[in-house]
Amino acid sequence: MNPDTRDLKLHVLSSICEIIAHLPDLENILLEVLRIMSDNLSMKRATVTLLDRKTGMLFITASHGLTPEEMRRGVYRLDEGVTGRIFQTGKPYAVPDIRKEPLFLNKTQSRTLEKQHLTFIGVPITLQGIPIGVLNVDRLFGDHVSTQEDIEFLQVVAVLIAQFVSLNEQFQNLRAENASLRYKVSKGTDGPYIVGRSSAMQEVQRQIQRVAPTKATVLLQGESGTGKTLIGRIIHDLSERKKFPFIKVNCASIPENLLESELFGFEKGAFTGAMAAKPGKFEEADNGSIFLDEIGELPLGLQAKLLRFIQEKEFERLGSNKTRRVDVRILAATNKDLEALSNQGAFRPDLFYRLNVFPIHTPALRERKEDIEGLLIHFLRKVSREYNREIHFSIDALELLKAHDWPGNVREMENLIERLVILSEQDRIQPELIEPFLGSRPSTRTDSPSASGTAQAVDKPALLREMEKREIIAALGRNGWVQARAAKELGLSQRQMGYKISKFDLDAMVSVQRVRSRKNKS
Image (tube, rainbow, N blue to C red):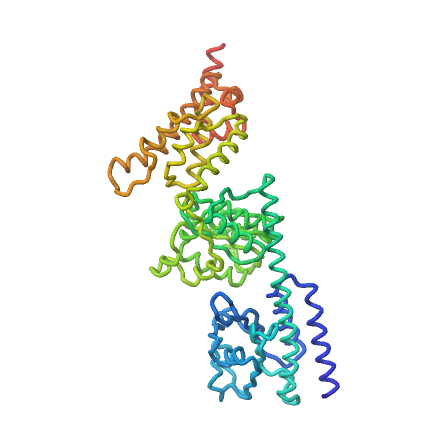
């Protein structure tokens, strides 16, 4: 062996061993390994392709010299091409000239323009004798070093990579255990947690604890009102991003012409009224998480820009050519079937697959009826504390609520309990107070769209809102339109009363009535 080559190898291996203590995750470690090899050796391109146990396919996990698009093409069956052969046989394989090798598929299309012959070498990455991936590179040391020497060096690097993968798996398991412990602590404090002992919710909790410590994109799917925002918040709080912002954006509530500037920001003069530059939500969420609710409502034009951000972690503000980079974890939520929408051309398939890295289904209440009683009691205690009241359900009232079908899910339940606490004049909620909101039947769901059933479903929320509004107005009237007095009578804080007045657009009425009240007194 040439002394210069030996020293070079030792330098490269030493540099590779040093990075493990300074980098936080496997992907960055692998990227740094390949960078070190490229900087010191005659290597144009290299890939680390690892087995995905869920799909049984080989995916390029890290690369040097490939674009993101070329990386995405690097997906192999276990019996496909040179990479598949190396994985299956567990033996190295060298291609002296890729132009003459039928097994070399060039799936990444990264070597299409090569004019001279190119030597391609691959070695298996094994852990305890079992293949877990493949390390592929273009020629390392040049023609003055034999191919066999290249292979032997790559086998040493592959052993180090296998150890990195093993350490990463152990680290991920520890992070998952840590997330589980933090979640249990959160349940005993004021932190967010899920109420529910059903098998469906236990599975959701297991998925949360598994994915929270990672940086994977999460897609929360389920009906409206099932608690997707709460789950997103829990995932953020159990992650290493907890100390950084958790930014929520409802893609359905912002007009389409404003949504791009809301997400990505804008520069001064970008449009009429843009008097100063303003960062978008992605910049606000830097190092934290962004929760994109109702992602299915995102316009197709913005879907392309979001896809680019997910892939490249970069974007431009509206009215700017300057490329910005931020580190943001994306948590998306939808009550629509995005896969069906993508098949219909209403949602980009490539964006769907990027969002669907770790899907979590949030079950409707009818799918976890055993949780209903616990949720009812949880919300009653919560609202009672907020309103400084000691209030309970009668047995008959609890049974009536348990029999209800809750088409609006957890959100409907929480809103109803708050209204019942406001309206109840006793310390025990009775069925008579509940029945106007639920109807004479236990279930409000109808299998046939009859006129009466539809009207009943539409009128109940309006009736509930109107009753609460009348109660607030009546209390204000009895107390000379002084908010503090009315709040005390209803068992509300001044902040809660202010919220109610704003919610029902009563600010103008309160102001006018207070003026009249003063005039009458004078």
